Length: 314
Image (cartoon, rainbow, N blue to C red; front, side, top):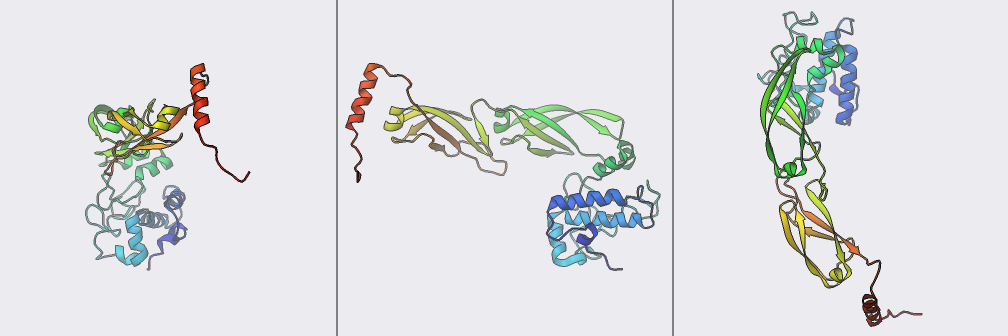
C-alpha cells in the first residue's frame, strides 16, 4: 500500500513554516494516541503522524523528501536512518515488533539522540509530548534505558558573558516522577554568549541570563556607549578617552562632528560565537551650556559676529 503524502498526513500545505508543522503534529498526536484513541488502527495512525513529523521537522530531510518523496527513506536508502542505521521501517516503529509495550501494541524502538547525532534531526523530545498527555508517571515508565536532556538556567555578569568564564555548578537531575540525583559539572562558557543563548553541554542544556551593564549597551556583537562633548570639542576636534570592554582607549574626535554622530571603533565589540568580533560605537551628545559668564557670553557674541551671513534671494 502506497504511503500517504507527509503533508497530507499532518494536514498542512507544502509551504507550511516550522511552527505550523509542530503545531499540527502535537494536535494530531494527542488526538490519535493509542491510549486516547481506542479505534482500530490508532497505533498505525499515530506511527504515520510521527513518521511524517520526523521528516518535515528536519530541514535537510524535508528538502530531500520534497525532491525525492518516500523513495529517499525506503529500503536501500542511505543516510537517513537512526543511530543504528535503521530507516523508518525499523528504527522508527513506536508500536511495531512483538514485545509487549506500554500500550499493549508491541515494543517501542524509537531511535532518538539527545546529542544531535545523525538520525536525531529536529524531532521533538518524545518525553515532552508524553508527559503533557499522561504526566510524569508515564515518562518514567517510558524512559527506561534513556536519559532525558534537561535545561538549566545560569546567571552571568555582563563581563562574564562577553569575555567567557569557567564555572562549577551543581545540577539536580530528575528521572521519572520521583528519582532525583545531584551532580557537579564544570561549564566552560565561551566569550560572546548573550541573554537567552542556549547551549548544550553533554546531555544538559544551559540557558544563559546576562545582567545588564550600567554603561555598555549590547546589540548582538556590537557595543554602544554615549559620550557628552562640549561645543569646542565637536567644533575643533579632540582626543578623548573611552571605556571599552577591553579597557580604556584613546579616540580621536574629528573637527565638525555633529551631535548624534556615531564614532566607530572597529573590532572593539563582543566576540561572535560564529567567529569574528563586533564593533564599539560611541554616540556623541552635545553639552549646551545653560548659563554663561560675562566673559563666555562676550566670546560667543564675538564668534557670532564673525560668522558670515548666508546669502539668499531675500
